[in-house]
Image (cartoon, rainbow, N blue to C red):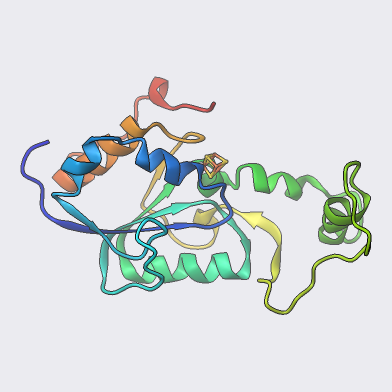
Amino acid sequence: MGELPKARIATASLAGCFGCHMALLDIDERLIELLKHVEFDRSPLTDIKRFTRRCDIGIIEGGCCNEENVHVLQDFRRNCDVLIGIGQCAIMGGLPAMRNAIMHSDAPLRECLEEAYINGRYIRNMTHNIPNDPALPLLLDEVYACSEVVEMDFQIPGCAPTGDVIFETLSGLLAGKFRGFERQRIRFD
Ligand code: SF4
């Protein structure tokens, strides 16, 4: 990688499994080279909870399944020049969006929660209660892709994308030479 401008990067995991953040670490030893050119701000990688200043790049894993996800995503849009969705959950809802297919009742969200906490084949819930603490973020009616909530600038497809693709995307963006992805390099395993 040649001379790159220093950039500030923030990351967040919304309704995802953290697999895409693990894929970020799959950059392996190139992370050392990358860190010469970037600093991480708000991110689970730094444990910084709020933006300390405006960032050049925001990386979002996961879609929006609750109100907190929406607030975090809107905060990233406000505070990042370029916003990137990483992985299928961010791009189209991914696995969490399977609940969007529950449509054969008048209350699909309730049906989904009852299946998860009461009626599911392997559920052992002695109280028969569905968690409902006020501290829990309110669930949305469906799981939404990030691009349905705010404008996204780029998307890195895959589940999870490879460390190579993530590294090349970030390097290309930082160098102003990002050209998109070759289809055969996108991974879903
Ligand atoms: Fe996890 Fe795959 Fe979703 Fe990434 S895209 S958060 S790896 S399920």
